Amino acid sequence: MTTAIITGSCGLIGSESVRFMVSQGFQVVGIDNNMRSYFLGEYASTDWNRKLLQEAHNHQYFHHNMDIRDRASVEKLFACFSTDIDLIIHTAAQPSHEWAEKDPHTDFTVNANGTLALLEATRLYCPNAVFIFTSTNKVYGDTPNSLPLQELETRWEIDPNHVYYQGIDERMSIDNSKHSLYGASKLAADILVQEYGKFFDMKTACFRGGCLTGPAHSGTELHGFLSYLMKCTITGTPYSIFGYKGKQVRDNIHSNDLVNAFYHFYQNPRCGEVYNIGGSRHSNCSVLEAITICETIANKKLDYTYVDNHRAGDHIWYISNVNKFRDHFPDWEYKYGLSDILKDIYHAQIDRLGL
Image 1 (cartoon, rainbow, N blue to C red):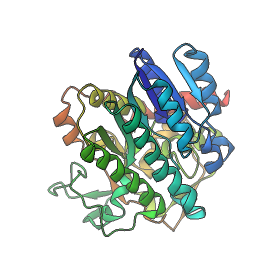
Image 2: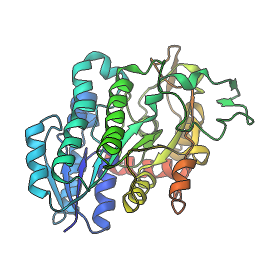
Image 3: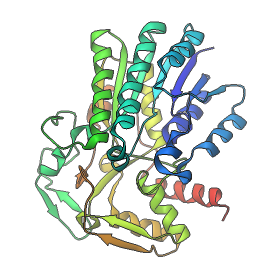
């Protein structure tokens, strides 16, 4: 049976990848040791999602509680399935700017060294497999903040005549900017994925995501913007807006739309590719705009305060230009808009909270 190895298999994108690939007939080998709960607290635990995956797909999903930094264990696992592995989707990561400052060694070893261990295992045991990496728009550092932005009533925006109005594309420089330590460790991994593709002619791709979101997100204050915002709205938990008057803009892509993009790449792969991927102009909002939508869906007012201090390396405005990916894969389309995404998150939160 064709096998996919998925790291971070119980997280938002990992679990969406498991479900999608199982539906396509894959046997899925999942790697996830629930370090998200260590990074972000017990509410961020993905253990609930592991149980759901194992119950729903017990004949096609095989879970391994493994640390991706453990090179010997990773290579042993790859060796066991080497003749069947056709796809690796690498979503495991330390995902938080703030957490990276507390422990840069762990942040870097998880994000960079862990990625290297997986790439080398792929090269040694299944060099013809497709390797997909969930990178981040933070590889561009704070360079997007140098764009000529205009302050509107509810958001920062760029002039419609500007070259980046439709979104930031892959030509933006990754140099000479403040990335945050998290952004630097993810950039190191991003470069490794590109290099294994170009140097060893392996079928690798970096998907530099905007805000990745969806119903399976275990969102917290430090990671998972829309998920955490909806949770606070539903439960009455106080919410803090950090800087930029709450007008900072993000594009948001549903996890299913992203994994569908992965599948399109898998079907017609390239070597060492880079794609900016996100909600683009199709699905984006400021924090203030997201609050209004959440309040409407939940029929509740959010208890929020403004903190006049933005996060280091945070983007004021970021919308992804996905034209390169669309040019390469013209059959890929969005299924979810912003309202659809937030309704999905709302119903998932209600179920999970037992309300």
